[in-house]
Image 1: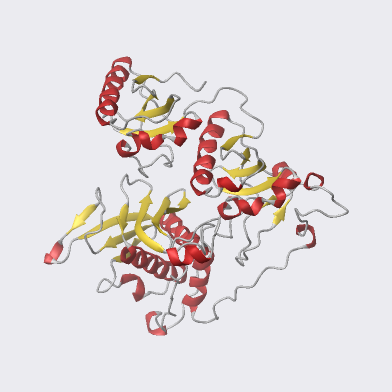
Image 2 (image 1 turned 180 degrees about the horizontal axis):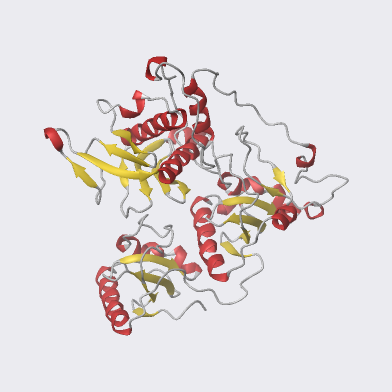
Length: 472
């Protein structure tokens, strides 16, 4: 079975694709299968339309270089491990205070990036990052190392920086560490100083007010009597999440209610849960949860709405989808609420907790010139018609919102009904999709003006493409 893992930040996303070891899978039937064989790794950076990609060797070199360079930046002590161009595929260099250069010494797939072949050496790809992009990349690596179900045998082997690289005296940390620096990055900083030992990871001792449990008791006969929300672990990276009161959290932070933003987040929530819900046949009753979701789509908490849902929460993917790494602070972030139903028929239902106050709109700049829209409509119809060669097995219309850029290239598409989710592989859209991820799990492309259309695939083979008039 093909497995996909995504570690997403606003300015960087790591996408890993691979397989499970069949010998391990046969012994341990995990609800979230272990990705133990890496087939492909892709790194998407904001401001670049194409990813850098490669196999296992590329990915291991990337995480080593990023972690070593983070050690150097945090400590201000030069670290030769970050600049090993002799044996590493990936190297990082500092340009100035807010600019960094990521170099790939191989024929790694990085179409769209600047290539350098000076001195007749092996071609290299050079990518310029700002500090925000760098630390989002560091945190994405942190998320990977915090995920015990992905390449568990791969560990981060850091070496203390010798004093000869630090000058006459040790340089103390003078730079402010952004909030995006994760657990492994903090450990890197401690090692870099060579003055203190690496921190010991110990389970946190919860405060009395945090010890409320979703399990039933004589004082609290049902979960409704004590509403709770599971949030991300603390900095100590304990696998046991802290329990927080959902109403108390929402009373202290803004709530996202804009219908257009809720519609976009609704899609992201569905796309996180749907691919990893692998045990649908085991559900004999509907399980319903209330989710707290941050503005970037991260699931920061959930609450079972009844006793049955609480008892069966480990059967759902939710515990594994809580935002990681552990140091996220949700105290001042706006939160959206969603109702998620794991239907006993195997259908996933996601909707805003309080519904939409008005009809949502597509977020982002739109192409509105009538002549251009008409031309793009005809072009989109022709491209889809030419590529649609699969004989339909569905019996109900598949409806999609499809967006194209000014050149007619598909930049985004969104299923509009359940059958469109279920049968998307019978359409040519995944193969035609040229946006960030290349599948229906991609985040919307809002970086350029797009023309939006409704595309309907009918069971009799008829195709309809009409100008988008909004959600119904």
